Structure formats: structure tokens, C-alpha cells
Image (cartoon, rainbow, N blue to C red):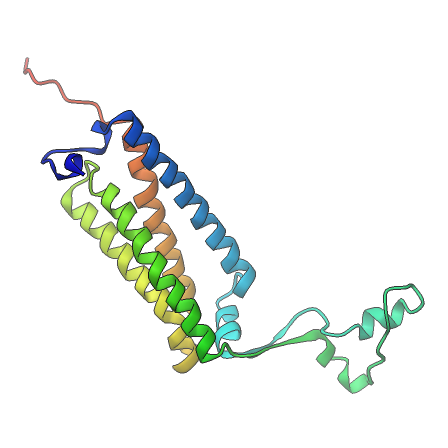
Length: 204
């Protein structure tokens, strides 16, 4: 901690052990971001409407929810019992109905993320401040990281208890959050191992 308290410290001046520690954290942070993106895609899908369906409940076109069409064609194939649906219900078989997330579930998800996201941002922002970027650039990325994270945590509540009109906020804030956190993670790793070249002290 004394290293961080000293004036003029830059990330490329850290000891090799410290670089290994923070590089390891940075790599795991990138892995966490990747898994978060994959989880997001699996949870709500690539389209903004998926967030509204997941948090507020909706009827979405998708794969059959029963074995009606597929089972009827393959009866006797050993794939399980079949259900014959009336013609009027054929369209309903291709719809997937999702139920709105409960207040308790939303509290649970928010509770977990409020204890993890701030710590994550705090650590990578701490390393990001040790880079040689200008104060304006550092401030911009750090504010973007905090703001996007807060908006992304609040978006489900706005969608669930406000209006589906808030749906675009979820993917937009998620993209800005991923971008800002990725920059604040990758840049310090690069600067640790590839510091900027010093300019010549003497003039011709």
C-alpha cells in the first residue's frame, strides 16, 4: 500500500510480483466480463425485447412449449408421450410464455450485484488511476463505469415496475458498462508490461 501512496507512482513501476498479481486479477476480470456477456445473451437474448419479457413478463415466439407438433409426427419413436392439440391451439404451441420476475427475486439479484459490482469497479479503477492517461481521460472512463453500472442495476426495476419503455436502457447500459470496465481492465495490464517510452531529456 505504501507504493500506492507515493506520489508519481505509475503502474509500470510496480514490482514484478505486483504485476503478476494484478495481471492475474485483470485476466480473471476479463473472464468474468465474458461470462457476464454470455449469461446476458442466454438470459434475455440479443434483442432488447428480451429484457422486457424476462423482467416484466410477455409472450414471445419461440419453440413449442409442448410436444404436440414434434411428438405427433414421431409417435412410436420412443421419445415419450405425445399430445395432439386442436387446430386452434397450433399457434399457441409455438409461443413461449414468460412470467414476470417477482419482487423477491429482483431483490435477490440486486442484492448480490450491489455487493460485487462496486468492489469490482473499485479495484480496476484503482489500477486504472495508476496509468499515465490524463486526468480528464481517467475521470471520463471512471464516471462512465460507475454510471453505466448503476444504470444497469437499476434498469430491471424500471422495466418491472415502471414501463417497458425503459427496456433499451438495459442493453445500452450493459454495453457501456462492458466497454468501460474492459478499457479500465485491459489498459492497466498493457501499461504494466509495455510502459510508454521516455522522451529524450536533452535537446539538440
